[in-house]
Length: 256
Image (tube, rainbow, N blue to C red; front, side, top):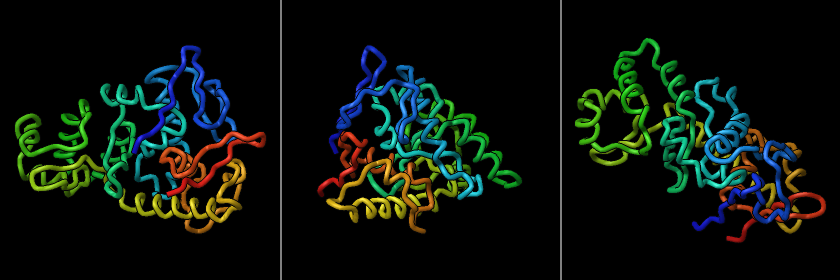
């Protein structure tokens, strides 16, 4: 999918695609966020805001705050996003339900939740080794057997333990995705909520609705996350088009 990226200007302003307005960094307006810094710090601030929308209690605080990579596009271009990954501060995961479905988690949050979940388990020493040797320089989404054996010095038995613990999941014979333990329910509820919110837009007159109206609506039982979490999802995934009006941003269902 070809995406139109948001570019950072020399005056530290962001012109939002299809909204016709410039946003000063550091403001929150109708759920829209921007920051007053350029580069990795700027991206971090946007990620931190999105993660405040993550429903920790829904998962009994067992999952680290998780956002989708494309949700970041609703706030910020991805020009400098890789810098946080290269510095070991941010991890990216292929979530499996779509080829372009990538999750983002801060490394410190991931490490803390994984260790909490491993308390008292026989796999803990192997998982600790993985967190200490692989995560500090983890800019990859998957690992093959040769890398696990040669670079990171894991035996086949240890790799099996990592899969059992949920930090790795099988990609194909001899390779594994970096994964998030116990994230299956997140994926199910995320897809369910997205469909429900898109249905709300579709049922509106002309399949369009003001963003502020959508975000203030009472949701159905199918929506378990904060509705703003899903709004950033459908905007970032370009499932709706953002149109500037005198009444605010209008969301129009994208023709498929």
